Length: 206
Image (cartoon, rainbow, N blue to C red; front, side):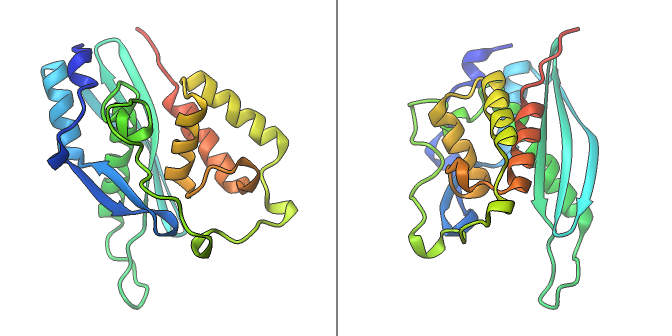
């Protein structure tokens, strides 16, 4: 494994932008560039497979596994289900492909690929460009909707196992749910984040 190649910051022309939750601008790397980086670092000796997938209302979720030598990383990826103007689903297959690409990129980030976009390096600013304004902040959650103390404890525990520092966790949450206020996490979001962090943290050796 050529770690210096995996962790090398991407060129400015390889970094793209998209609109994230609540209108914030997010930076990302195209999956083709991530695949090219993995090929370069592992000399094409790596593989990726989807372990399982789930189709929910409005979203598809996959659990992917990246294997490179004795290192194995697993991570969840997701994608919104695309519909036309009248609400008919266009192609779940394409949505699953997008979710698989998302999972691959998350697995690769655990090896240092594009980690600077998740706040893991000082070479580039974190992925979140600007804070959402008050006008686009999510509505306050009702007490029964908020994450439980048990969920928050599990989230912190999963973050520690994954190696995320406080700032890294904040950036991670901002990218996933649009903010980093733990007390404003919904139970559903907390459950999803815990699952994702737990999956990212898996590292099995043969």
